[in-house]
Amino acid sequence: MVNFFSYLKAYFTAAIVTIALTGVNSLVFTPFISAAHAQDGGAMVRPDAEGTGINDLLTLLTTPDLEGWEDVEAKIRVEWSRSGSHSVDYLLHRAIEAMETDNMQAALEHATALTDHAPEFAEGWSMLAKAYFHSGYYGPALDALQRTVALNPAHFEAFSGLGVILDEMGEPEAALRAFQTSAAIHPHQPHISGAIEDLEARTSGEKI
Image (cartoon, rainbow, N blue to C red; front, side, top):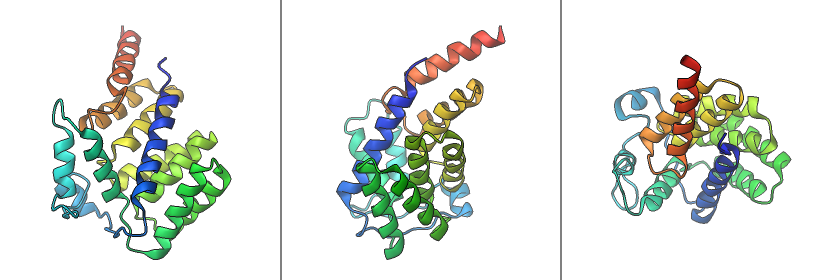
């Protein structure tokens, strides 16, 4: 099997670095609500500093052969991480710092406090999933990822994470659907096509 765990660990780390470099204290919180999910594909329409809404960024990300997709992805991550609550900012920042220094126990503590304090903030659950995943706790990571996509159905990284863990749990068909969903949102992710091809080959063989 393709080493999806190594890929996803690198992908999670890249997400943390993006948020850390941008800075969470200047971000503004926008709650995710089910009505916005249904109407706008999982994210509220709100202009960023350059006048581009999150939905516009997500639409742009699906463009075939998109040059500079990394910048678009980074902007989306920043939008998802916007907070406006000083306490949420602080907990997210501490969790990021702990992850960057490989202090998984502290990362888990801060991320758990974050989800307790702001249970409707999708990135809190995403951060908790990262902390669990890096700690080797795949069951709790799966639960946190499911909560992430329930709050933000456009969260391509969370769907990739679900795919990895479901495959490890012996559910290749469910894993394939998760990866396909992730690819539909963000087709430029490194190794996503290889992950799908591998799972398609294995699930096809199982049905014969």
